[in-house]
Image (cartoon, rainbow, N blue to C red; front, side, top):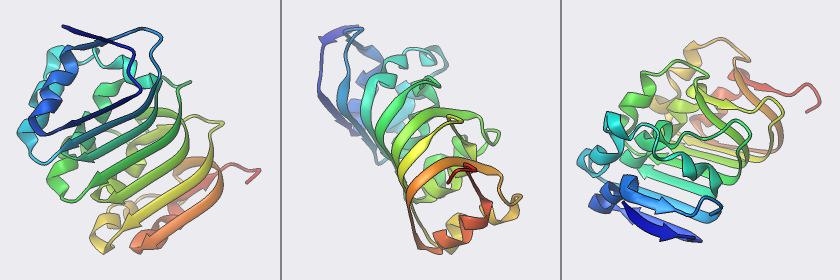
Length: 189
């Protein structure tokens, strides 16, 4: 283990992601931003190991979480609490292989708690049905950016089956507009 203490911002790229399970933070640490970027699957090998399944729970105290490419696969390992509240969650994946394990998960099984701004780009839009937001979630902005291939599986699911909650601003770019009938908003929206 490597004691880090309190950290405001942490950005790990490439093979440096392998150090993440070894880092120990102060229990009251609240990060402004955690950004993980992995161009290759081997960059996240250490994070995905079975013995590391519960060691990343501290991430629930990150205000802004940005996962790029293969790092998106680390999301289930982060063990975000249902009462967790993030300012911003951004998931970006360019290729299907970057999210292949998450796609095997059940719909509505990947708990992310409360999120004020949620942005999914390209292939990451495909995991939208897997995400579980808090029932009383109030999103200031939901932004989806997708091409035709990225929404093809979502189009096959039942209308109003993806719980989003209250949304102040909805931004759907490209083919992401096709997901609109699948989204379920809070009755007061």
